[in-house]
Image (cartoon, rainbow, N blue to C red; front, side, top):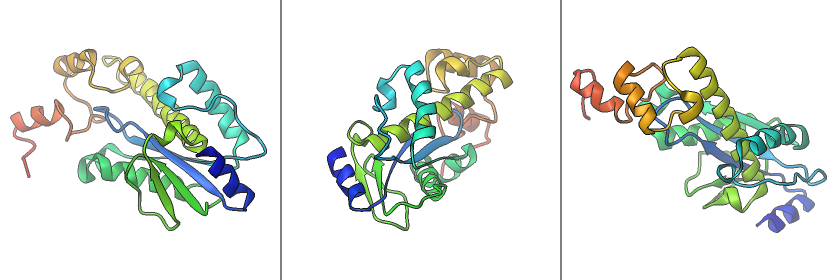
Length: 206
């Protein structure tokens, strides 16, 4: 897949890779990143962000920003997730990430099986974050940026260990919600917050 990517660059076709982070957690926005690699400055070690150590992601995050032709990180808010649903909010974040590139690509390669609404041709690639380096780079930017926000959340909400569970529905996080209640940063359409709101009569099924 990356050989095809390089061939397109040699033909003058500018290709961006896009990926997201944060579809599954109970809290915080969903992030997306878009990256246009520089074929003259290859980056060693690019891979799906989920299989890299935190330290490796952090170092690549810095290298990617310095070495690529263009990068952009965007998000869709908790409110947008609750209003649109997580899939549509994710696609919106991806659309924003592509629009944020200072070089607009001729083609976009997106991790997964769904495409955002874009003004240029796009292709969805299942497991693209392990097949296409530009998507791998995007996955790293989105993941690290989201993790940074989780550390900020922990500082604002010290009763919650966001720096550890990153907002995912771990036993620890669920116990914190049970003990301290939910926060403004929690997604109200995700359980257990959804159930708690329904029990309080503050959320109706529709």
